[in-house]
Length: 240
Image 1 (tube, rainbow, N blue to C red):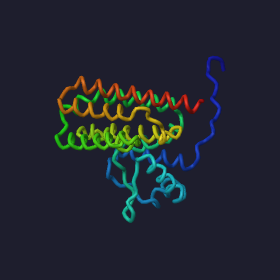
Image 2: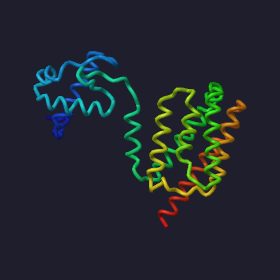
Image 3: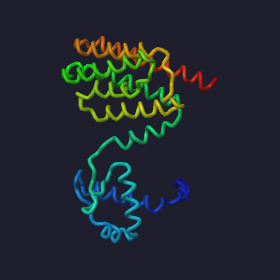
């Protein structure tokens, strides 16, 4: 018949456990289940879907891995409170050894931290400032001994934004460092000027303590420029 569009060819049907996953997602949405609400027993779900309990179990495990469901041993399966953490965890591994990806993640972190530092200046407590100064003092001591202080560096950024209680940002900080030190054996990367890196962190803390937003933002920006230089230097060494 003229004017009619042709029938699209069939695509390969999804595997059974994927189909069951979609059915469970649909059940959650259709019934507007919220975090903490229970799903029916596996046997009931299997009967309703016309599949084996094993297929239901596999689908539940898959939905657990992405943070949609949680199994409470001996009690049942429940809708889990939404969290970006599974996505962030997978992102760290998905980046692999790609230096370009790490550069792009560094830029995202730079924009986030410089954009949110004003809230830290407004909200940070004396307790958090004291903790930051303790961390930077450990950095100085390690820098003077020409030792790496990657652990202190990650702890510093966590503490800097802890007062905001922003779980997404906390997760991104963790992902950044996991990816950064994973890519191309960055755990052993050479920091050509550790005292300068310590000084960057020290000046960030003092700017925050002085409630100077612009200076804190400027020092954070400089710090991330330094990280970019480290990435560039390590790329040259791996390509050489």
